[in-house]
Length: 321
Image (tube, rainbow, N blue to C red):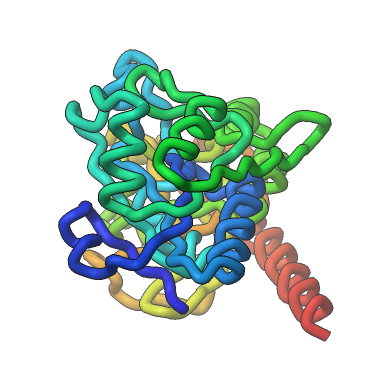
C-alpha cells in the first residue's frame, strides 16, 4: 500500500467508499507521539480490514480560531508529504480549515465528516484530543458519539520524554530555547525546511562557497540562527553540505536567510524545489569585519561539517551492518 494525499472531501468520495479507520489531528511535526498513533492506525486497519485514513487540516486551525496566537509550523503541508510516508501508508485527507469547519459542533463534525463522508468504523486519537467548535468535544464525547454512530474509539497513550508527554508545543518551545538536539529527539526524525531556490546576492560564490538560497514559508518555524551541517534533497538525490540560518550582515535585505553550500555540487538550481535538513548546530551567527574573515570562518565551518557528515555516514553503515 502507498501513501496518497487527497485535498477535499469531493476527491476523497471519488476515490473510495470502503469503511475506514480514521485518526484526526493537525500532526504538526509528525513527532514520536504522532508516530505511535500512526503505527496503531496501520495495525488496526490490517486487523479489521478497513481503509486507513489520516485526516488533517490546512491551514492550522488556530489561524482562524486564535489569530492572535498562531503557532509557527514544524511541518508545512509540503513537508508532511515528505515525512508521513515514512510512518504511514494509506490515505491522507487534507481538509481546508475554513469558517464552516470552524463553526461545526462536535456532533456535526462526527456525523457529517467521520461517519457520512468517511464511513468510520473506528477512530483512533491521542490522549489529549479535542474537536468541534471551540474544541468542545473531548474523549468522553467522542466515545458517546461512537456508541450513537456505531464506531469504536481507541485512545493512544502519550510517548514520554523527560517525564512529560511529547507534543508539538514542547518541540516548538525547545527550538525557541535553542535546544535543537532536544527538539530532534522528540521529533524522532530530521527537521526539514522546504522551499524554492532563489537568487541571492552572490557573495557565497565570490568567496568560493556558492549557496542555494531557499524561499521558505513565512509561517515556518526556523531553528536558531547560526551555521549547521546539513543534507539537501534535490531531484531525488541527497547532497551533504553546510547551511546558514539568520541575518546576513553583508546583505541589506531585512529578512532571515536560509541558504546552503552543498559539497561537490555546483549546478544551477534556481527555481527548483529543495528540502534542507539541518542536522548539527555548529556555531552562532555573527558579524564579520570583512568578507575575507568570513571566508576564513567558512573554511573552518566546512571542515567541521564534513567531520560530522562522515560520522553520520559511519553510524548509518554501522546500523545497516
